[in-house]
Image (cartoon, rainbow, N blue to C red; front, side):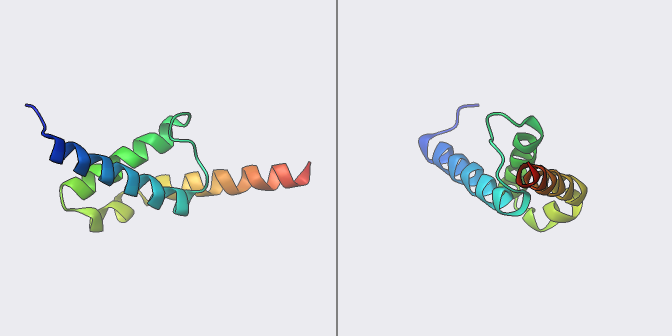
Length: 81
């Protein structure tokens, strides 16, 4: 299966939007260095692509919360140094 340029642009837009949305919720993660965050971005993008975004938060709430809490704890540790 070959995707056209229009579909490529759509997928890039979906990935970018998912990354931004999850950065806002989870904290400042680097997509290229954190595999767990990257996987979550891909999963959210899959839900968007399949027109099922309304189910994403419920299905991935524990992962979203874990990343957010981990980032908050990292920031507390950095502030405490």
